[in-house]
Image (tube, rainbow, N blue to C red):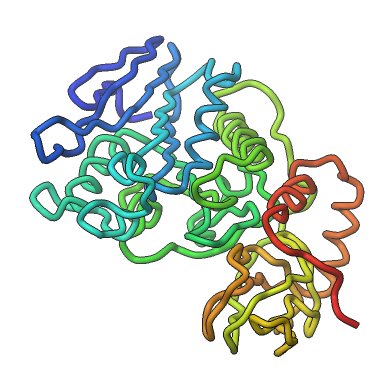
Length: 353
């Protein structure tokens, strides 16, 4: 690659070295430094430089767990290039079990940032100038928002050839096409010339075993794809490219009993959940507006009108039949386990007649 020197936070990492760096982010009220933990693994041979970041939202710690588990494996012994691992980006949010920063801003809407801007803007600028600027590719790890869960899916701007290759190589069953919101990390990384994808998986405030397995395998797949690691890419049981998604929302306040689990295929007009009054009277049945797959669901069964119930990715009936057949052949795959795991905190009952 073009760059020869690798320097992060004032620390130079030479070929064959592994270094842990505390990258300065901010200060506490008492003036103590707040540092972001970074591990840099550089192989002796030149090659691509890849970052893996987690917990840009401080309560999304599945990604932290993925990087943590990844560090225990032998996949860190890369043969070419450099791997930059950041298990917690939003250290201040992480310390307080909060999604956002103390200035109440969303860090993942604050990129590319500025050195003299708000707290969020300054942290975003640090990440872009110290991490993104030193890398050729990136993987950013996320979980769902508060009181929701996401079935594992990769989100990527498939119009960008390098990002498309990266997304396919990660080996997630679901790949959702899109540039990402304005101010998001992956969008600004791509604009800066560093193709980046994100993994969305699981719930906030949790580290979930099947999510860890999918995440670790995905990072390994990317490193193999880029020639940084020996081995063969492990494919998913199927891979669906998603162009359209929509949220199904509650129309009345009440308590939900779900009829499907995260990751389950659905058909148009299939019951998703029944909404009961607080005293147990059935109020209405919420149905799917399309054929597809449930990529996200509420984990909070109490809802008000307009609140999200289920996030559905649109698929054709032919795609559903094909993917179901492929999934049937891979009963022990992590994606099958994830569907079971992510439903454990939901009241899932048989669909009404």
